[in-house]
Amino acid sequence: MKLSNLQTKLKRSEQYLPAEDTFFLADIIEKESGNMALDIGCGSGYLTNILKNSFNLVVGTDISYNTLRVQNYKVENVVCCNSADALQLKFDLIICNLPYLATDEIIDVATDGGKDGLELPIEIISSALSHISNNGKFLFVTSSLSNYTELINFVESKNYSAKIISKKKLFYEELIIVKVENLLS
Image (tube, rainbow, N blue to C red; front, side, top):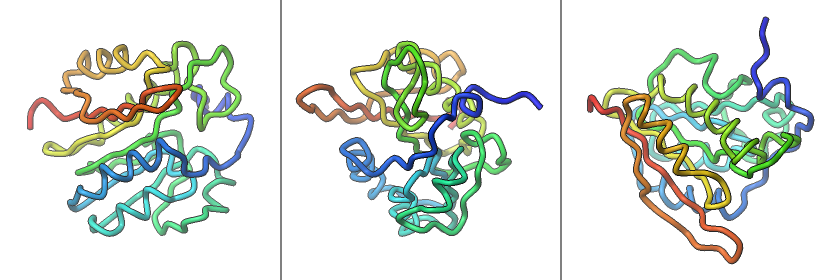
């Protein structure tokens, strides 16, 4: 069995605790509703718990079994897998707080995105795209510290629309939320 980049580079299983980027995405998803939602890299379960208020079925995935086992915000439907690779469902909303920091070496999969902040985000986005329902959307957080325009170009090259829907300026970076939709919708 071939291991993914995420699996082979998982050196720490520390839980990513909610931070500024998490709260930024939380503000956006509180306005969303639908039948089924997916939180890729659900970590502590903070965002997954928010989704439970306005979706009939919410699934959280995380590559770290230990993280899922000790979640601060317990979530019912969790799957230990790489991104969304173990799932076969289509979702009305998919969210992900991407590991976007540009790093030479991926030590922490919760934050390190690899070269130009693209390596892991592209792997995660690739996995998510096939799980967007016809009228669904995928919201992800990235940063001015990564090559976010390359992420948008990558999504568009796969025949999906991608646009920046919100930005939040911090003293050292600008957080960016990108909305991805199926062009057929």
